[in-house]
Length: 397
Length: 146
Image (tube, rainbow over all chains, first blue to last red; front, side, top):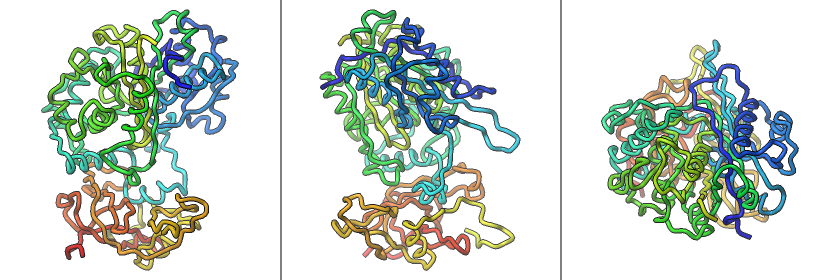
């Protein structure tokens, strides 16, 4: 049984990224953005019979029931999706599988991250979905990574970039161009965190070196935010308010959590996920009108372009150099600004690649609308090049 | 790395070994690198596990290994990756590929961070950070490999 064309995204909603929230609860944000997505689809909450939520610190157990109760839903299918930055894309694939299998018909998928200002104790109170910074003793990570300062994600992507430079080579200018193109896009998106703040390659290269070889402007800014989509059957989708965005292909691949144990630093799990998604959809790389690629760092985008099959292995730098990656260019990439310039709202940042692709395919992207946008490739990336989920979304099924 | 003393307690995160991982840390305290090895496949494994990735019919045994390897990749942290590491900036975080195969994350110590490269031959350097805990770090190997 294939998922091709069986389901569609019919509603999207997103909270504008902000540096901080004041007193908001993750639960409240999850429910609010989910309700807005349901309304966007032209549905009543009573028509929703499935819910997928990201994990969140306020409800370490039974998170789905917590959100269902808060929203007053009545569902036949619910669950937590815990795939780091790939959670949003993974939710769409799981919702499609549940609907196609007949377990339910309409699933709301919701993600949110709140972020409080620093408290007097010097500790930031951050209860995000998944990126909560909870430290559980006796994990392999706390025993074999943390004692060496291998903490957070910056260092891991820096190691990937250094290995890539060693094996294939890429210039700092080529990597910087990715950040610059996405900032151009963000300057056409009033909801983006960095709207109105264009940058140049020079600006990126002159920004402080954080972890060799990654500069500050190649690294995402953590923000608060929320994003949700509604997935329903193709049959129901045709009767609703928005133009349906059909799920045509989905693929997933995970081999490790810590980058220490990745089989390769440069040939990533994205390859198998993307190949599966393209095989299911039966479309070619050159048919893709929009690439919505998880972009926690510039190097992430470079490796995704290669491993998803848009550029030859080792040719990512040359690809970036020879293409215009702006929303109005010949290879439109992350028209909302990407997380690099839209902001990374934890798990909701990953979902922003799904919401943006859906808005573009619905023709609702206003000042940053990609021309002739009929087919999109979405990639979600969790952890340090760990969980990978690829989706192909299209206007026609 | 400064010698720990009661006046300057070690302020960085420490491992919390469990019965499965304890032999690794016990060996490190004796300045030996000891890893699990699959009886079924001969493959060395790191980190220590309660069960073999090669199946429930496999058995994991403990063996001393050479402590030699090379830098698989690395980064130089120009900003601390956590507040406890601020005094160490700039420091090298690396993944070392051991001669026996497994990968380990550690710091490369005893050299100028700017001299670290992918492929740099390294050897284990045992750093006693507290009376109970010895971290397995790596430093450049002076003699060529083999």
